[in-house]
Image (cartoon, rainbow, N blue to C red):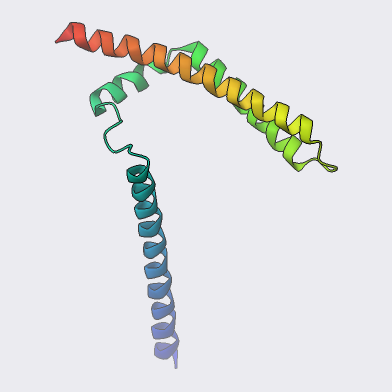
Length: 124
């Protein structure tokens, strides 16, 4: 009896593991499909520039400030989306603020990446 329960438990674990693997593979394939459909296959910086960027931003206070502002804007947007009764104008304004903060973050990130790329070009 005990062996039978153990075999059933192992089969259940195996099935769950296979389902989890299928889910992960599905998510990865979907991400690749979306990337390919959007034409984003070759739009990433080389890994060495990515590593240099990550090292530089550790000490870049402005990027962390901007990330915090974006987080605040996103939380405000979610609060407006969940408010009842829904205030459409407040939600539209909150969404616009998220776009503004996202754009500001992108400008700051690109400024830093430009510095990283210039430094790498000088080092060649």
